[in-house]
Length: 235
Image 1 (cartoon, rainbow, N blue to C red):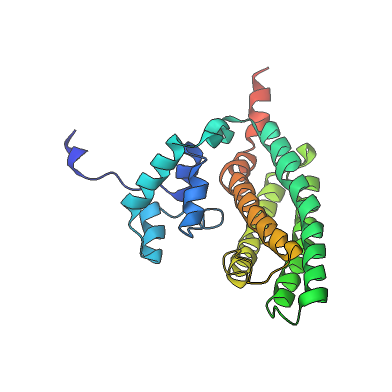
Image 2: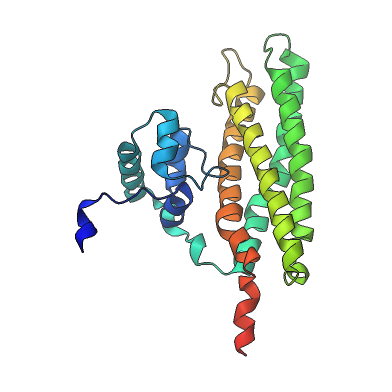
């Protein structure tokens, strides 16, 4: 019991989110990437950004007490339910939103491209994200999410690694999108379509960070350990 005097080490960003799902809002506010770089501890992530980890942690705790969104507990879900939630909630959302966003930004470029020089680059980046993500979602659903593939450990491990690399790439593109849009702040004189596109891009980034967190931190470790089939061996 002599260890009491040493301060407790800070948890990783993934650990924080498993305990407190609402922390995502606070981490995003501070620009801390929890979906791809979530294995870092809070203090390491804060040091990179010149932030005080204790202040961020207090902010997370304060926010969680004032936010009802913590009523879902994904770390308690079994594998099939988690997959179903990711597909129904996150994959469907992206299949719906990405083409709509591309169409909106194409309209902005066509009508006002001369006034907003960044619009074309944003439209191009959205097009890349759409192409890349729609293929990625299909790959996941046909591959690692498919119950028939789960017993093939070699396949699962290599596919999971591939999907994690995809996630890193998507994370980089989302950060570029955030930079190009000036943190999703519409430029002066932006039309309604332009403003709506920015608001929806912000939602899409938030949703995708949540989505990637669920896969990287919760689902992939379960699949890599083949947890879904373990309970069947007790019969």
